[in-house]
Length: 456
Image 1 (cartoon, rainbow, N blue to C red):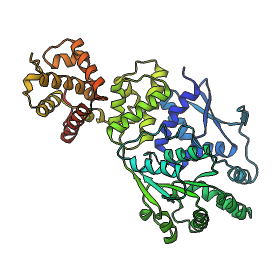
Image 2 (image 1 turned 135 degrees about the vertical axis):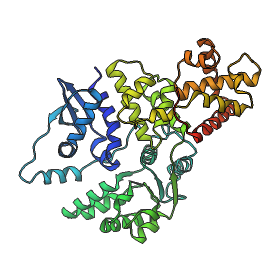
Image 3 (image 1 turned 90 degrees about the vertical axis):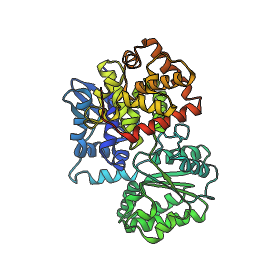
Image 4 (image 1 turned 60 degrees about the vertical axis):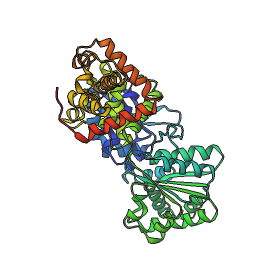
């Protein structure tokens, strides 16, 4: 049986896809799996406020998610992790419904950097190169060229990762940083107003060398909070302090934001994070596997990279689920197990749509290399035909996940050891031979553009 923490990490991967990013970051990110015994799963929360919120708002969703992973009906309980990491029961709130306790918890909440989000663990591709370079630049030369740095992109494209990476880098240099989501900033501001602590609030934020604000679009419509942030921004800017902001859209597209604040957000550099391409998604999965110290078959990684195209958190959540499914069931980690683990996530027919008719793959490869289709299956051994044949073997293995015996049969009854040699040769050369890499990517683009039905 896998540990409670491993099961909970897989659950977090799924919950990332089902709740908003601010809710995940605020309520779920710092929780842990404490124990799993006799179908009772205990989740540890860092404070009473978070435990009660999860119990009242997400209990049913968490219960369903854990049941889907373990295959059992789960009773979910919450506990508080004391500073010593000892587990103590979550106390009930008193007559005021816990309002005073919740305000106290929120007012003293710490701004924490995620240890996993560093520049070293960030996978750079064409879609994020500008934002990555700008983030590095402000870490090296704060308050000058790009102030503020505004990074925007769709959910799960790496905005928060870059924000935390900047925080880690400059904190190590001795800079004072404040990292906060727009939602947390608003909550802190409201609490300060209620407690007559607005001067202390302003003083705290104006004392930062780096102000890092995540998901600023959530300030939309909050005029008083925007005005407060504007004054803080002006003070920091005048003192050459660096401001970095993230959003899911550019400044002009954020509704109900004052002209003054929008103007400030556009003063520096606005950098876009696009959607990662297939090769970048594959590289991200390889990095994740290396971090986990787990060997994962390339065909599994490519299957995941093909199926989950929209954001990185979705991609990593799917990988976590597959790994947990494999650990709990003890099954071989292959594409068949992967499709079973993700059966309720991948849309019906998606697996078939992702797979291509073998004849189409063969025809596309033959046309690309300018040879006859029959040449792939006969005895010809000239250099061009041999390369095209090995590329076909590789693509049949990678796209359709065919067995070695099946590929051998398709290509003129070749022995499975011949097919294995061909696949391994292309796999080994693709990372060191740019010409081969470009050729295979162009063939894949041709295959994607045709979108044929699956054929057995």
